[in-house]
Length: 477
Image (cartoon, rainbow, N blue to C red; front, side, top):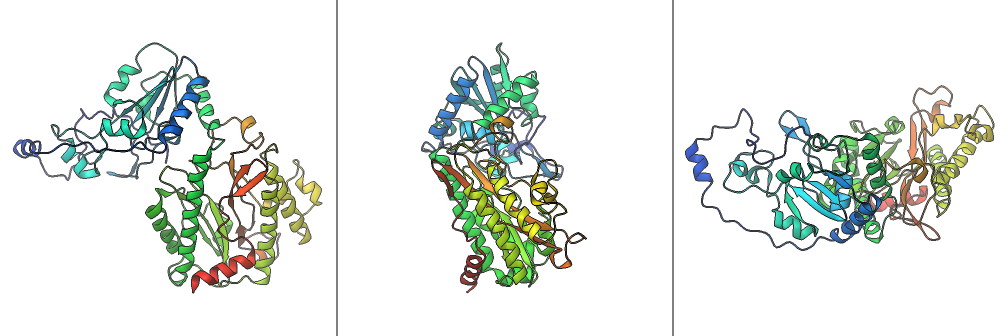
């Protein structure tokens, strides 16, 4: 939900956001509410993200010397009628500013940065007690300009000053598609604006030590969420996929910011739908359940981990054979990760293992070599997706990076990517034996490229079939 658009000026000078069912506000009440309040600024420490964000802004400015760069946070997005989704700031905005409040806009120019933000309103207006979206008594206390400036380590001005700041001459690039209000303030230049988005994405390809620590924390909390789910297995069997979704979400909210993406809880045949987020089915003894879940930490870095578990706690011989094949493919993919190899190296290594396994079962209509050739890829009927994507503040991170820097590029120390091969046999696939139909298996881990190879950030969760069984037994006691 990073694209949260508004067509309205986010100024506090507009009428408070109210609804038709709100009670009337006589002037006597309004006048009384505007008096008798204390006013205090919180003494906030400088946030840990402030220094990394300052370095990032400097590098971004150096990429576009003499230009004005505009990166909005976005605003609220309606979920239903007068109910909004929980706000999540745009990734690029937060990466370069550290700010997570709505309606803010970062402007970088000639190495200098200013955050234009919407602080809490004064008690001389009705907003603080009437506005459902920004009012302190409705939505909570927003930070003051001073609080934001102190904690983020950069100058902060009121969002009302933004139009004037953007009205001067000079080359301006805007990170488009985040705020229609900001988009409307500056004439678009599709090429230049796209170039800003590209550079902002490519700068996130290499994670520094602070970012790696954030990702490690997200993986560690994710591990706890998986463990919570297994401990609740009696209720999982009673209530089905929804119970795992809710259990994991509780851990994500308690220790992080949120889930990094809608959890995928696929019991039985639902595991063959890659993005099964309905999570409305049963968890049935004798079947498998695929769990693709990740915690987003409080600085918005997210984990992305998948495990496939036997509902009974023990794999059947067929389930184990297929699971071990996927594990072997993932292990081959992991071992292929190191600096200097193509981004696709993990995918190619994993697919070679899966294609051979499919051939061993007599499923390929051609030889393994022909199936793996770019002109064929018929093995993909049962593997469907790529093995890797970049990971960071977005679960599919760095999406605007140039292909030469990402999909067709090479791995470098500090990159973090997933390795997640899978096998999926659809329930109505007549080209596979009936015993395979409706089985889906995926194993996914978050892999840091190191100087001499890789480190598995999510290694705390077991991967081999025997270790999965032992782990389930231990947590279900």
